Image (cartoon, rainbow, N blue to C red):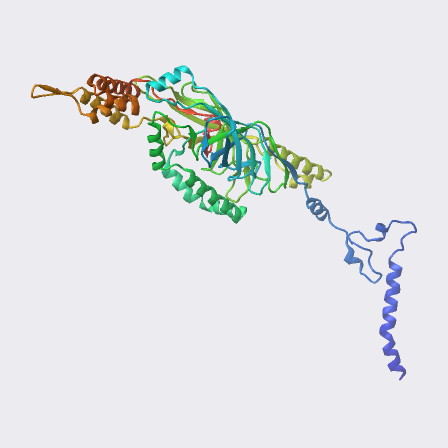
Length: 534
């Protein structure tokens, strides 16, 4: 019985002895010592009395540096400001009568406006304004119009847009300076086959962008494409406008689809956004080969005034992303280049030629400032640990880098008759119908002067021939005058005038120069610089 009691109390005695020994081996902290000193280095809290010393080993130097590396870097604050001079491309969606100042002008924004990398004025936003002024027709211009059978020459006019309503309902008061409207805009490409290949190769990038922006962006894109198709004038529309233009008396309207470029006279502030160092890691780096940069011209370039070496500058209107949707170039980055070929138009209807090339990319001021903020924050947090600073230091990307950029696309007025060759050179063309129109005018003049002698009488040309001959010189007015006068000399004179003016305009006069107005939309193909360009 005594043996059983001894064996049952043996484990309890051993446990009490072990606790006493451990309590004697751990020193008692002095009175007044901080609580942190009561914790063993490497432990988050003071160990229990029965804890093993080996469980609270002090951290190594590598662990301390690792803890320093995970300190988060404050994101950079980026202002979302649309600067003065930024163009708003607006297409009218209602016909406007040009009769007196104050007529309401209503349209939609057809190209998204970006601040840094965010859409601030999406395409489809509603723009409203009014007719600002109507200029009188000068006496010389009125006389020339009367000579061509136009009794109501059109007045010069100026419109302005003073408000933009965003898709979310916000109303933005704006102050703009508006350029003359363009009735029909065409999109030219230098190499359609290459554009198709790039489109196939870039589908993965487009899919990545679509996934990143979400289904809402895809829906907006479809709406923009539908709006472009809706407002694009068709053949019947052009035929109707041509027939109306032949009338000697007509009212002056601005038709739906006419595009205006409204430049902001004051900046627009959309607040600010933040971007982390990871989001800014690729800003200022070299774009991938065959990237297409969308930009606008800062100043007009013309083959009549430019020469080799004339500087050319463009502003990026849409941010550029990598195939993994990393921001490379924010909006408002600058592309700097020069004219490498310019030939002005000459007599005998020889047209002008122009070619520009872009040689440098300059990151926007907002992008440079954001990178500087991240770098200062990183350096401040890395102080005291050289190894951590070397691992976490943000390398500042190049603010300017060399490139070779050619024109791959441009939006111009259809009446400018501009074409792009495969190398991005622009030249004006002359319609092949000039041979047909001039030949027809000469034939009508000859037919009007032709008479036949039959049974001792002289038969003059028929009324249809006389009307056509008069119409070639003075359009509808000349046709009616020839028909009413029933005079061969009158018909011959009108036909001869029409034939001579057609020959001079199509074959003898000076050709057309290549003119790319200010804010012309450009598509620039990026390529690595040549050795001599670096």
